[in-house]
Image (cartoon, rainbow, N blue to C red; front, side, top):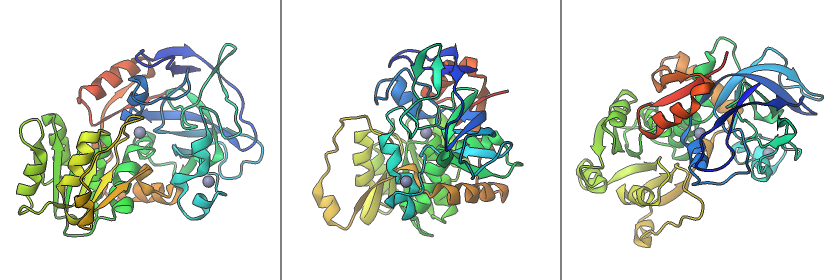
Length: 363
Ligand SMILES: [Zn+2]
Ligand SMILES: [Zn+2]
C-alpha cells in the first residue's frame, strides 16, 4: 500500500510502498476513505513536537473495516468507522469514569500499538504508528478501542473531520467550557479547531462570538461558522478589542486555538471576572506560561482541553446527528480534497491559511 512517511523533522513527507502486517488480537484492519490534514501533524513535521520516527502521521481518519483480529467484537468487516485519536481501553479508571479521552493507554504508546509492537514496514524497516491511527496511508491496523462505529450513509470525508478538529473544537465549547446561552465568547485562532469552537459556541446559544485571527481569509470563514464579530490581531490589540466589544468587561469564555504561549496569556486577559480561559491549542514541548496571578484571584478559571473532553463513542454519533439536522457545518469545512501524492501541497496550503480544512481522499 501507499503511505506518507516522515523520516525526520523539517523534511517533506515521502510517499512510500509500505507493508502492513495482519491485525493481532484486539486489532482491526481499516481501509481509509479520507484523512483530514491537521495542524497537529504539522507540529511534528516542523519539529515543534517530537514523536518516534520514521512515522506515518495522520490522526483524523474514517474508513471501512476490512478484517478483524481474534477477540474483536465491536465491529465486523464492512462497518464504517471514525478513528478516535485515543485508543480507549475501556478498563482504566479514566475510561470507566466516562473520560476515555484521557485513557491511560494513550500515554504509553511511544509510536506503537497498545501491545508494544508495530504493523507498518518499509521492507524490513519498522515504521512507527501515530496515535494508533496513521491515516496518511491507504490502510491501517488499529486497536478496536480506536474505533467509533457510525452509520454507513454518513459521508466518510466529513466523518473523518469528526476524528479530530470537530470533536476537539465543538467539544471544547460544549463539554470542556460548558458554554451557557446568552454568554460572550472569544476564539483566538480560526483554523480547523477554532472554527469548530465557534460553531460549538453558537450551538450552545452564546450571544456574542468574537473571532480573532491575523488572516482575513480565516476571519471570513469564522463568520460562516457563527462568529458575530471579527478582530484582525495584526491591526489592533486583540485584548483591547475584546474589551471594547464587551462594555470593558471581557468575555465569559476565551478559547486559545493556535498553540502559542502569547495567545494563551491573551486568552486569560480577555476573560471577565469569573470567566474561563480554555487552552485548546497544542503548545510546543518545553514552553512555559507566565500569567498574572491576580487574574485567577478574581474567580477566573484557566482550563486545559484534550480532544474536547469528549466521550468519543457517545459524542461522535451525536455530532453526526447534529450534522444531519443541519445544525453542525461539516461540508463547509472541507475546502479542498487532495490525493495522497499531493500531501506536501496540502500542508503548504494549511500553513498559508488558504483552507478551513483539506482532506486526503483515498480510492
Ligand atoms: Zn488534529
Ligand atoms: Zn482506558
